[in-house]
Length: 271
Image (tube, rainbow, N blue to C red; front, side):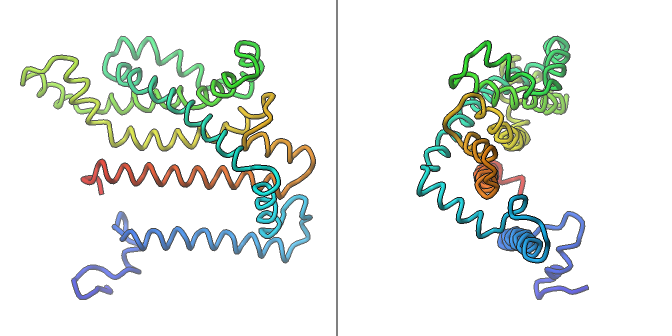
């Protein structure tokens, strides 16, 4: 076995050892390598195949389209508007889902009342709800935020409820033995126990929220990343479409990494 002077297995061995730990620089390097590989494959496919640029544009044309969107079409303003919409919808979903999910996972009566309804609604296709959303809320910001909220809340509340159910009963009984009231058990035992997994669930559902931004912004919208993508699609501007999609992906990646970093700072014992 290859080992370093300190007695630890070598890097190559750790890479393929089950649940081995890697240093942060190594993880970052591997992530960069994955992106470089993906871009290289894209460039090779475009250069060596007969696929028309209309269907698979080159990386250069996508970069030029992205530059043009920023310089000529004020794409930064569209990005800002989409980020604000997602942030508002996601914040509302989280503020509602966290207490409801904890109650559903802690009190069987709330679980029995809420789970069938939420299970039914979360399987409804959000695109099919667009006409009803427009009828109920009009074509303003309310309908766009509502669509983003619907794509996030019903999934998040069940994830949090499942986390609350998994809190060991021994924790609850110990708290009662020490004289805690029910409100203390909910806040000091159950909530604190699920905080690490709750942050992970928030990170995952934020990605789902971003996945609905195009749907939300094609509803009579003149601004936002989704509207730019939809308008470019109608005119057959594939590089602009890809530039918009990649922008959403990069924003999602950045927000995901920020939440990961916050999680490591808040819960260093999970490293």
